[in-house]
Amino acid sequence: MEITNVMEYEAIAKQKLPKMVYDYYASGAEDQWTLQENREAFSRILFRPRILIDVSNIDMTTTVLGFKISMPIMIAPTAMQKMAHPDGEYATARAASAAGTIMTLSSWATSSVEEVASTGPESASSNFTNVVAQLVRRAEKAGFKAIALTVDTPRLGRREDDIKNRFTLPPFLTLKNFEGLNLGKMDKANDSGLASYVAGQIDRSLSWKDVKWLQTITCMPIFVKGVLTAEDARLAVQAGAAGIIVSNHGARQLDYVPATITALEEVVKAAQGRVPVFLDGGVRRGTDVFKALALGASGVFIGRPVLFSLAAEGEAGVRKVLQMLRDEFELTMALSGCTSLKEITRNHIVTPADMHRAVSRL
Image 1 (cartoon, rainbow, N blue to C red):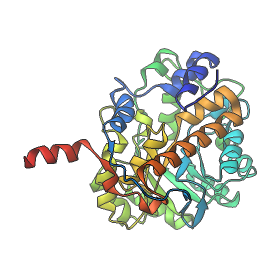
Image 2 (image 1 turned 60 degrees about the vertical axis):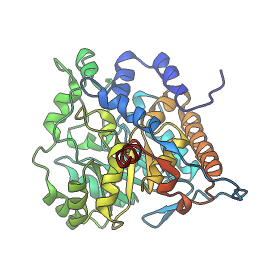
Image 3 (image 1 turned 30 degrees about the vertical axis):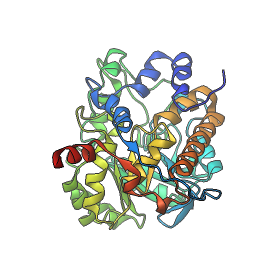
């Protein structure tokens, strides 16, 4: 069967992967309302395309922290990719490099920062643990260019499939970044082995002062990942963040938070153009990318599509996902009458809030 869109990889991954692994990647927190909403909210945003514009040349390139990338589509940090495919994070890094874009390496990766850095793209390292200073130094030395600090996980969300499956990292894999620190292995537990492991590793006292502290130990710019409100966007700017990633952790933390595409505009307005704002969560189509940019995002990050395509076809699958999203996004730009990213404006879309305001005026 020929794969014609990103969503089709999920069914293939479900067939190929052990149930415990597929469920770990696919599931959200509790009722999984936000998981569904991350997708459905995109479908409520409609286009206002402009016609009779010369679209024979379309430029999708952009810069992130001064790095030129081929398109505003990047790879989000996702944990334990070797559960999906033996090449794991290497394959993802190679695919990102081939596509001319950025990969974010999860600190809970099954390949180390040094191993992944040797494959190429400008990557960023993520998450926060009590061994962060050491990890930051290693990432810097390996040539990483930024840190994405995940701020929505003082505790792990309740993922019921992981509890049912007694999820734990398969015995032949380790969390490579923590291997030399005796933190690489995850024990079996009575609920989710991951939840027990995380409870021991994550610092629940993490606060804005730690964002400031991080800037004292590294020259790398820091992106704050997990912002959903205007209030926190303003605090992130004040704390010296170089960028903001609007994220609800793939709907895996607090259920019943809004979809990231719904929260995006509030955060963009609060940032007032002082730092770039990115969107993470629910992106499955080139049309989704366009909608995020029209609402003020500087780019988007994709997570699950990478995992599912990696499980299905390894590096080739991830390359294909990036290519399909690129092609769809280029087509959306052409059909909307935009030849560069700066031409994508708020007037190119209409949101439920716009429609509500229009009805109120009547």
